[in-house]
Image 1 (cartoon, one colour):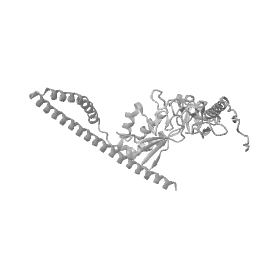
Image 2 (spheres, rainbow, N blue to C red):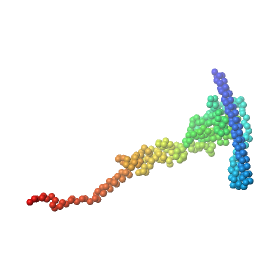
Image 3 (cartoon, one colour):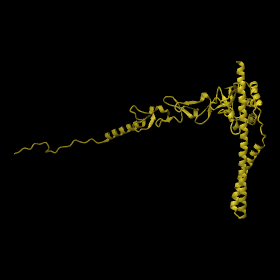
Length: 357
């Protein structure tokens, strides 16, 4: 049974070695295709320069000095781009062609990983090779172990994208950005820094043990000059409004928008003491105090929104209540100042009976 297990592992390693060799062949093709595309682009720029040369000659011969000046300006503008493009093309063409490793060399590299780094994992269906690092701690901040996963079907895109991912297995992300699981890892992509060229060469040459070792070593170090989030601010929380990072015990959670804020961008309801951000708070026009949305009501008379402390039992705001009192006082004052009407005096003959002779 043990012998069958060993043979099965051996066959899988052979399959894995072949997959990696195929991936390196695709990478070589991708490099040649990039050279071809750059050469075609360079040829187009040369044709444009030839065309400008002819147009410039005609303009000078015919005395079209305005047109000649425009052509000269265009040539001068394109010259710097052409020089830069030419230098990149020269670097690409002059770089030594990477020789493909033999199948036996790749097999040996996989065995070397077991000895130098530890047991690796592979998935023939997904075409991946993974190594798990030891638990990493930087300046007393535990970041946990990381899985370095090489995607064999992405190796052909080495010159345009990273073909591997760095996955936190026990993530302790930065408080201000959950995508940053390591000062130099964001969205599972490692900022390689000075190790970029060496890592790319290791992949090109199929030196998997060197590749995993270099990535693991970068994860074990901290460069304070170029982190996604510095370790000094790792456990802080980023204010959603101003972006300032504050300590976890100094941030304030708004229960309405469900986000964290610093003390300058938050307040509390003067009625129920609920913590709210400035955007979710409401300033009562009567008392000018901040309150939460749940402690506001609408005046039935003027339909203005006020806080609960500034509304009467009748459902009107204090301002409308004062206006109503002033109106009542004016009416009473008006009634008290009006003259009282005198009783009417009847004529002398009024009320006398008529006596007939």
